[in-house]
Image 1 (tube, protein in one colour):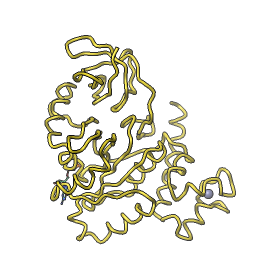
Image 2 (tube, helix red, strand yellow):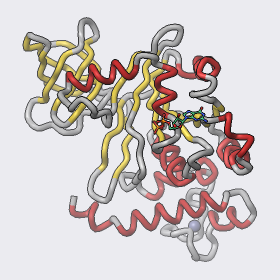
Image 3 (tube, protein in one colour):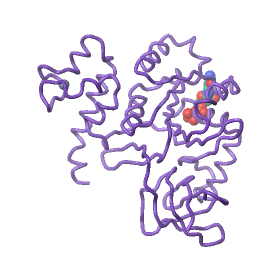
Image 4 (cartoon, helix red, strand yellow):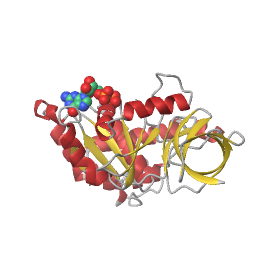
Length: 302
Ligand code: GDP
Ligand code: ZN
């Protein structure tokens, strides 16, 4: 029996990196469906580069997103999460905040990588938007992956090195460009992984783990760009707890079951009125409560 880290997964096929030795193609025993990139597993080698996964070791954490039907694991056992945003096409505050909330709920530190800094001067709104997240305590790295790749690597190097980072972002923010600057042969490595997984030559829409090359160290888990990021797997109080500006107000509303909408004595709403909570974040909070309410019957069926 060997121990290994899951490098990539496509359907029921997985690639694992043994602690000593070369990559193995692996399948799971039974129909275990929840194994994800970053998981630590115990596997039995079958020869010819094949293995069968016997068990998954306990996880330190699991980052996931969900729809009304199920939670979808993104990665396990990460040290930190990075969200790539950019001024053009404009990033979505809603999507960004959802990733921040999921990472916060799993107690995983999270930073923003504000890419396409070469376009910041032309955008009057990016500055104030970044200030909001800085004021909430999130580190923000301003980089230009395409126009200044060396500076981009230099500014992220200390934060990335020695850690396992999950890289996320909505499509179009320049995440692939950034991965190519951090892992110069990422394209080639992805093709290798894709053919080893039998995922089809042009399929790159799977999560995969890269070792960061020297002078950096650590690992980068690149996940496909997303258009939506449901948080139905979190309860309302878990979501509030993961919003830094709301955490201190938990339990301070007059009614225990407050929906923070129109009840008297709502601590959240009074913080919105005197500017301690940004109106955009409050709007998001209401949307999340609404989604949880609408999807409740679906979760109940599960
Ligand atoms: P992804 O969908 O997040 O993987 O984004 P891509 O890496 O495919 O990039 C989307 C577009 O943004 C491409 O046209 C890139 O050339 C462009 N892009 C990436 N980084 C930068 C940058 O630093 N500055 C500018 N101006 N464009 C960039
Ligand atoms: Zn309230």
